[in-house]
Length: 217
Image (tube, rainbow, N blue to C red):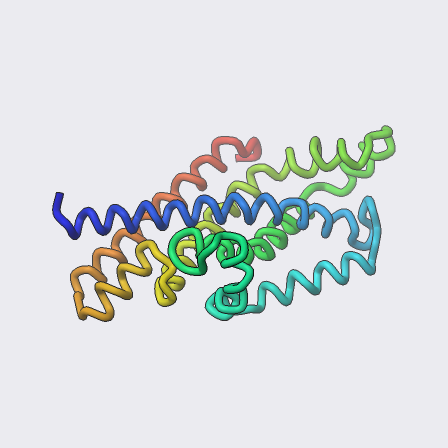
């Protein structure tokens, strides 16, 4: 196989690994955070204004940090967890930590779209908070949640490319090492094309999936 093709395939695979794993972890932590934000808000099912304020403030601070700065700040923690701060696995930690607050806010927005009268009626019928969260909040907001996934995934692709500047691996690393440092315009162009194709595939796939399961469409 052509060495350039092999290099691009390897970079694409590394990028996909970083995005998929960090996306999974971001939703694993972001989903409960978003639910807590909704439950603890004023007039929420578990109204806790102070907790809501503190958690919301932390999330806002995390969202305001530029990814490249967050990546550098997290180097000691990343090394402790993965044994390295470079490459694919050295990039996943800062990727998912940077995406988690965005996921939490999008989850919060999706859940707040649910009709509050429906929630109140089900609560009066004796449903527990757990039942309301699972069978009303999450079930009814699935189409919205799915539409949010490509937003996070595409942002993670951009972050992973940015991580290439610090040896993060993937297509970004190839673009920097072979395209920028070696003045290889062709290599730079191919990495851009592959990233654009990945973004289009992700967006079209999840948009179509959301339309299929959204009963309102």
